[in-house]
Length: 179
Length: 430
Image (cartoon, rainbow over all chains, first blue to last red; front, side, top):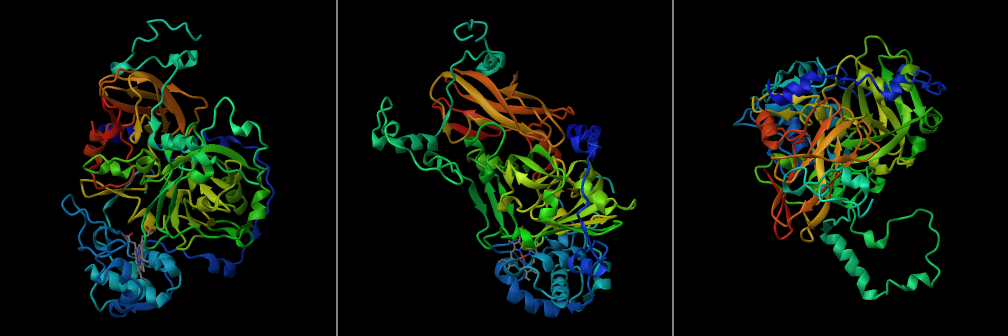
């Protein structure tokens, strides 16, 4: 084991138990939180998990995604996802290596639902959160197909997207917390 | 004790003229400091007025009026964040804390570094909520005025972007002022409600182990965090350095996760989703992971390892000839307190222990100082931090051998400044 790794392993404590706050057992607090109903939570909850939990109803395929991509994304990410003012979105569908340290979708991203989640909440930057579920599925399908991860004709929906196996699925080692 | 220094006191304790740190405590040394080119400029700016220091005009006139919110002297205008990053879109990028212009351990709030992914939201606190839901007994919503009524705690804590200092991975040493290279780290007093109080109120389910935190910026930045850490010492901060958190730092509320990388300290906090698994968001998979030579990437590298930097003398400043100087710098560790900082003037062949200025606090900047008799010859300055867990800041070649150069994040190697005979200072790999 390398020197660095050894130092880190020896002191690996994800949580320091000596915190002043935790030790402060006497805190007396008011209870001011307002209860939320299931319907209210649904308006807030936009989490999508790696296993597809949280993906909304809807569907889309690469050919529709390409049209939206060219209108709403290509300016920054390049006509074919090769990158521009913003990062590249397309790489070969194989894990990165010393000779091929690519961190784009096909080579690096471990989970396909992450693409849907990020695009829906964050892209395009000037109108974040405005894409519909169908548009987002179509864009996700387009990006996955452009990366060679799925076929051009494959439809993406909550079920098929969760089932996509990303090439770099096993490319990560958890460091400060264990699976 | 001035005037009582003996020859022995001035005998170096390490190569290149490093003196014993006790000399500071004696207060007997008159120190020269390397000066920034810009601060020289500021002095010049004052010159055209040709004021006589023994009888300047301002001792005869009523001064400026009171001000509702003070600002720095106009002569300090040059002390500003350096804005970098993308131009398209304008909201994605960083601004750096000018570490070389600052002293002590607290970063003025207006100089705290920024990393925004889609700009600074203009949040009306009356329309902002913090929601806690998921694996809890009772999902809850808090207004900002609710939160202001809870018991609070303060801690002085650094926040460091996981991508800070990443120019260190470059093949060639970057030549920039220290703040434009390492300034994605700042230190503030953060005050707010211990998150454990709010989570307890919601009643966390025994099956829960993660919390997904989401901000109210455009793009709803989200990251997954282990519940145990949040229960231990996270703060829902409402105040920074005594005043309400600044917009660019998360107004009206920011999640503070002591010692953990900047991205986990979610600004504009609006939602905490208590769960049994990480969501695997873009900012914990595609980004903030570190590809290693093996092809595997380090993930959930939350803790910021110990690091130190010499802020004076540093690149962009100039020495004023052979004299006694104070080497000044900052050190910090996400794992706890700084236990020791050593400095070297001969590129790491020999080391002298620096004086650590009180207070020395966990997960906070620690200011170190070391007297140095510079003989006018070329020298290689380094600092090396050790934290209370025994972790020692690594040399660059060790770090690069271990991690390769594609990791991008978490660069904490020892930094080396070369001082030239002509008094210029540059960044070198040595």
